[in-house]
Image (cartoon, rainbow, N blue to C red; front, side, top):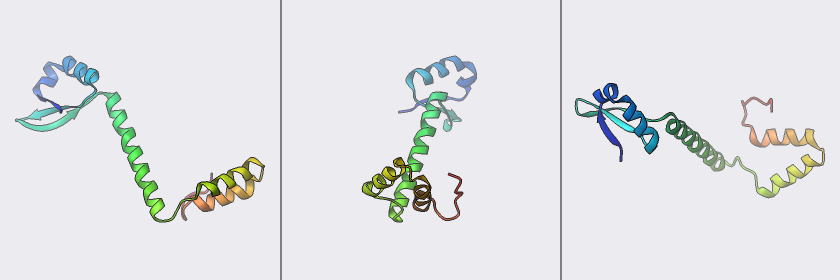
Length: 109
């Protein structure tokens, strides 16, 4: 549950609000004329939320890649890595580019 406070309190009780946000690690809803207007949160919580969004975005992209058939089995990947370790780097690098880079993407891997 969010803590809800009037926006006027932000000016008058900034330190208390900042301490609450940091200590409780949760956003605070500021109201204006009795309705939600803004969310205030600590930098740490904001950064966490940004990382979560990036993770969800990446997971969504990966799901779409799998749905399109852009994936490789663990066995095939192990074979490629074994060849890479045995110094067959040039062919493997080209193979990995073909497997994982979509057309139109830069190839300066």
